Amino acid sequence: MSLPFLILNLVLLLFPQSGNDLCGCEDKPQVKTLAVVNGVKITKPELGTDAQNQVGLLQSEIMKARDTELDRQINRYLLEAEAKRRGLTTEQFLKVEVTDRIPTPSDTEVRAFYDQRKERMADEFKKAKPGIIQFLKSQREQIEAVKLTNLLRSAANVTIFIPNVTPPKNAEDLNRVFAKAGGRTFTSRDIEAGLAPLIFAVQQKVYLIRKDDLDMRINDLLLEQEAKRLNSTPATVLANAVRARLTIVTDQQAKAFYNENKATLHDDFDKVKFQIIQFLTQKQQQQLSQEFAARLRQNAAVQIYLTPPEPPKPK
Image 1: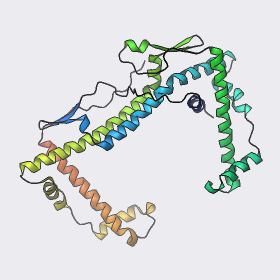
Image 2: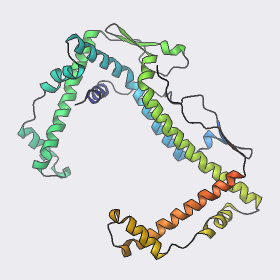
Image 3: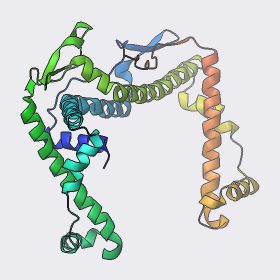
Image 4: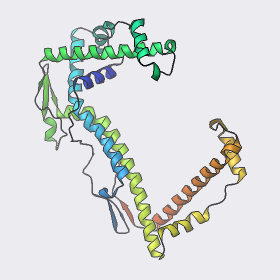
C-alpha cells in the first residue's frame, strides 16, 4: 500500500468532516458582471442552475479537503519524524509497524466473506479469492494505521489552537498557528500550500463550466437581438440560418462513416444506418450553429470579464 493512500485513509478514519462551509475556492476577487453584449450585462447569478450546481459540487471537494488537511499534515509529520528517529524511511517504518503486522486472511475467512456476498459477486470463488484477500488485508492495514497514528499523536502531545480551518482573508492570516505537534507548528500557510494543487485543479474545472455556460448565454442573447433587429423570432432566425442550410446525409456518407468506425460498431450497417444518419445530421447542425454564432459575434460588441485561474506561485 502506498504512503499517500495509507495516510489519507487513516486521516479520514480518525477525523470526520466538520461541515465547514468556508471554501477559499476563487483565485481572485470575482466580478459580478461576466460579460457585456452590445451593452447588455450577463452576471454570475444569471448562469444556469446546472452550471451553478456543478460548481457547487466541485467546490465542496475543497471544503471537505480543508476540513481534514490540518490533521493530514500532522499525521504525515509524525510518521516521518518517527521513521527518521528509527533510521528508516517512512515506507519502511509503515511496512514494519503496519503491513508486516497483518497476517494473510485464512481460507475460512475468505470463504465466509464470499458466501455472505455471493449474490453480488460477479466471479466464482476461485477467481474472486485474490481480490478478497487484498481487500481484507487493506481493511486491516487501515485499522492498524489508525492505532499507530493514535499512539504517535498521544506521544507528541498534539495541541490544536484553532479547530476550524478557514481560508486566509489576507496575507497576515497566513501566519495563524492552527496546531503544534512534536515541536513543530502548523500554520495557515502550510494548509494553503498543501491544498494548492487541489484548489487550482478545481478552479480550472469551475472556469470551464462557467465559460461554457457563459458562451451559451452570449449566443442566446445575440440570437434574441438579431431576431429583434429582423422583427422576427429567435426560432425563425435560427431555422433560416441553420436548418434551412442542412443537407441530406446520403447512404454513401453513412456507409463511409460506418466503414471508418466499424471496429466500435457491433451491428450490421442496415441495423445502425438510421442512427448514423441522425448522428451526422446533428453534427452538421451543430457545425452550422457554431458558424452562425461566430458570424453574430463578429458584428457585435462583446466584452468578456471571466478570466482563467492563475497557477499557484512556487513558494
